Amino acid sequence: MIDLHFHCLPGLDDGPADWDEAVELCRAAADEGTSTIVATPHVLRDRWLNDDVAVRDELVLKLNAKLGGHPAVLPGCEFFYSADVIELLERGASGPLTGLNRSRYLLIEFPAGWVPPNAEAIFFELSLLGVHPVIAHPERNLDLARNPARLRSLVEKGGVVQLTAGSLLGSFGRPALVAALEFIRLGLVDVVASDAHSIDRRPPMLAAARKMVAEQYGEETARGIFTDNPRAIVESQPLPWSMQ
Image (cartoon, rainbow, N blue to C red; front, side, top):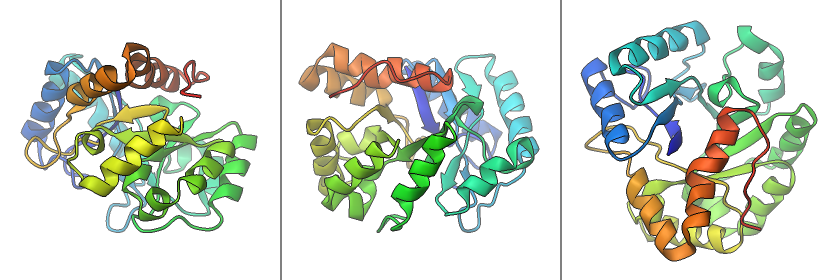
């Protein structure tokens, strides 16, 4: 499996506090069958600015050295949505944003309670630039959970939908579970990732979610959203699998 949303760089956000925790968390993911994770520290969110790409890259290199490639850790970020995303991307390597494995796919997190009214217009602009916004955990966003049509609108403007493994297992409560299952029913889901933060508070749980999806929706669906689409994303390729 390939995990596209993973907080594993120590001391940057609400993920691991130190190297021991970071290594333990990554090895737990490897133990359950994850071969590759993308490090996605919060960027430009509240107190977690993390806007120096060089600092983040150095941590990725050091973590890979400690893990010996099991699992492999790739660079990325979780960008807290703002309307200046186009300007930030145009800064290129000197800017704060890193696509998932430096691909054309950018992980974007909306505020928990709402989606800004300009999101569709910004997503359309991103699509014109060849950038695919990956919507982090929409089932945990109150606006999108209550209004799947809004999520479909974002998808139609180029958005890619990423569910959280724990949501499918009930770890984020019944509303998130119900929304996640509804998004699957509507054919809106492209990938599932762990959004892991720590062994105790937010463990990976990707294997259990994959088993659940395979049992309820079939092995082809599980392979598509846990392996095939994630691989295409880190390789900056079109998604090969769709629920539609």
